[in-house]
Amino acid sequence: MKKTHKINREQLFAELILASVTLFWGATFPIVKDAIGEMPVMAFLWVRFAFAAALLALLAGRRGFATLDRRGWKLGIFLGTLLFFSFLFQTFGLERTSSANTGFLTGLGVVWVPLLAGPLLKKPAAFGSKIGVGLALLGLFLLTWHTPWSINFGDLLVVICSVFIALHILGLDVFTKGYDGRALTFVQIATMAVLACAGSFAFEPTSWPKEWTSSLIFALIITSVFATVYAFWAMTTFQNRTTPTRAALIYTLEPVFAAVFSVWLAGDRLSAIGWFGGVLIVAGMIVAETWPVFFSRNNQFPNKSIP
Image (cartoon, rainbow, N blue to C red; front, side, top):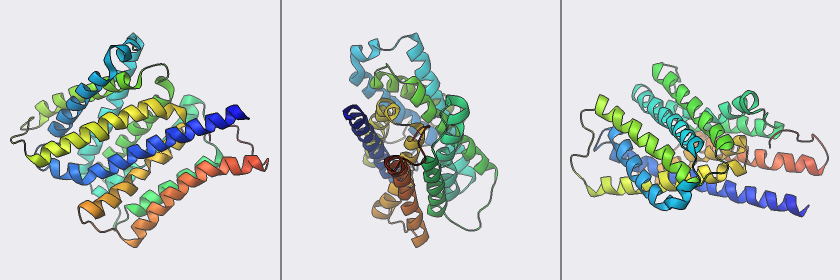
């Protein structure tokens, strides 16, 4: 009993850390929106990721990199490539569809995780997690509600983005055990920086800021240190201490925080139905967390799959 209690406390701590990641991600939305008005998207991404990779290299040190064998480097490059393609398809999709559609369709990663975890990892989602996913998906839809709602080529690109996000979440669950989180995160972010830099030089008119304004420097610091170094280190270190489905549900907090900070910092307005969508997202997390515990205490619906 004591061992089980310890495991539950460790998992709760890991999930709180992952929730803090979504807080920083949500806060950067209005900051990044202003930054990409001063330089191209891919250029901003590679500078951001290059700065973050340099910080991670210092934090990891020799001891951290000592944990990376050849397999670790290959896995880091693989996971970084998945992340890069998620950013790539999301960015090009955003150019061809609305931000509301992009937010909703990116959130489809929450649905792909439990659906893919079964065939890929042999970890079918528990019944309570399925209900939580359904509530979170409905919440994401209401949070980004607009009329008319249509599907176009940009929407398809963002759907592809959401699949790569789900694959990255599953990859973190399987491949990160035994490696230093900072070192493995460095490989992922450095991979993203190299790929984004190549894409910027190939497709954008400029790949370096024309002027280092205070707002741009602030944006790069916030996105590099908090939204990249801390965020992906936390994901790489703590996500394997919970389940892929629960991690995906936690990540649905990102649009909630994005809405809050957009209203606070950018003066955006959110409709009543949008706020209700945010409530449903939180409700989905609560259901996924409490359903297995409630029914296990009453000896009903024993949970033989992941919570």
